[in-house]
Structures are given as structure tokens and as C-alpha cells.
Amino acid sequence: MDRVIYTAMTGAKSTLGQQAAVAHNLANVDSTGFRTEMHKMRAVEVQTHAFHTRAFVVDASIATDFTPGPLKFSGNPFDVAVKGKGWLSIQTMGGEAYTRDGSLEVSSNGVLQTHAGFPVLGDGGPITIPPESVIVIGADGTISAIQNGITNEVARLKLVNPPEAELVRGEDGFFRLQGGQTATADEAVQVAGGYLESSNVNVAEQMVQMISLSRQFEMQMRVITSAQENDRSATQVIAPR
Figure 1 (cartoon, one colour):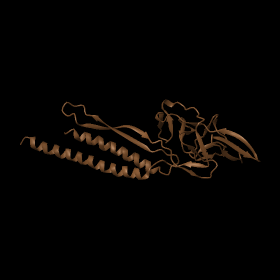
Figure 2 (cartoon, rainbow, N blue to C red):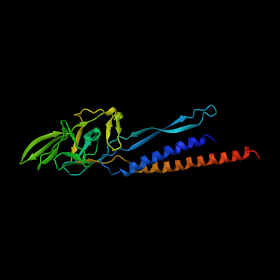
Figure 3 (cartoon, rainbow, N blue to C red):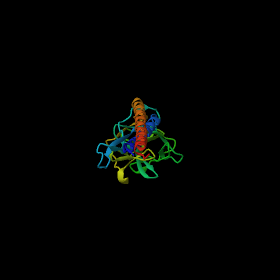
Figure 4 (tube, one colour):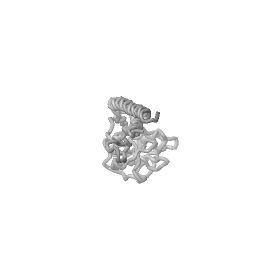
């Protein structure tokens, strides 16, 4: 059978993967701190002596657009947005992870956590908020509790800024360093209390890409159909009568 069918098949498979990524991006357009997922494709030459112009399409890597999203005021004292580069540190079942989702809350035990229930880390570990206190988060990540007019520093958020090339997105949507390492705190990272960072997904761009991928998939399926028809015709010509 003509090898072009395998080339078209791998192209169609990769296109479906890209469509899934675009659909995932569009589904998270309103997710706080979400980062756009991008698939990078590359061609691999078919190892054959007959044809040197044909190639397979492979999913070379899954990249992430780390461009910061716009900040929006929420007024919630527990909300926090990272300004510019940087990440919040949280404790997950798989160890320390990093997120830009600063929509935080306090558990019944007084632990500062994400809406999913993962504790937020400070310089000394998980952060505990005193009961019935007014919270203020400073630009450097310092958390202050005000009780009876007295202000006390509770903790400081562990803000990190590891190289983006070393970050890997997990299945839970959080980022981690390659090799399971943990990042050190970076005092240069700044936050804005009472704000949340919107997703950096460009809806118009993603819709255009979805349409382009749909047309690309149709073209690849036509190539497969044409290869099958050519193979059928060739079989009829060379078949013994």
C-alpha cells in the first residue's frame, strides 16, 4: 500500500491532539491564572530507500504560553495575583507545586488553601490564619492579621520564579520542576492582594486555530481516502485475470 497513507494517518492523529488542546484552552478561558497549552509538531523522514520526500508527523513537544494574563479586582482579602513573572507555592499529594490561581480560602482548621483544598505554602510551610481576624496581603507576599486594632505578621507566601523552560504541567493543571525538585523563594516576585489574574487564553486566536485544524484534518482524511482508492485501482490492474 502506498506509504502516503501512513503519513496522512500520523498527520490526522496529531491534528486531533491539537484540537483537543485548543478545546481544553477554550474550556478554561475563565479559569483563574490558566496558561494556554500549545502543541508543537515536527516532521520525521520515513526511513526508506525508495522515497525520501515523505515524512511522518509527530507531536514533538507540549509547550505552554507563560504570558501573564490581565488582573481583575475582586475585593476579596484572600485573593492574590502574581504581578509579572512568578508563582504561588502549594502542597499537593505529589509534593510541592506551583500555580497562578490565587483564589484562596481558609479551611475549617484555619489553613490557607486553594479552592481545591491544597494548602498554600509560606516560607515555613503551610500557613495558618488566626480566627476572626482581618487579613491583609502585602506586595511582597507578607500576610498580616489585624485583631482588636493590633497588626501581627502571620507568614509570608512562598513566591518562586524558576526558569519557565524547567516547568512541566501536571495532569492536575499545576506546574512542577523537572526531576521533582523544589524552587527557592524569590524576593523579587510581587503580588497584588484583592486581585485575581485572568486566563491568558486568546479566544479569537483559539477559534481561528480550531477552524484551521478542522480543515487540515479533512484534507488529511481525503489523502487517506485517495490512497485507498489508488491502491484498489492498482490491485485491479495488476491482478491476474
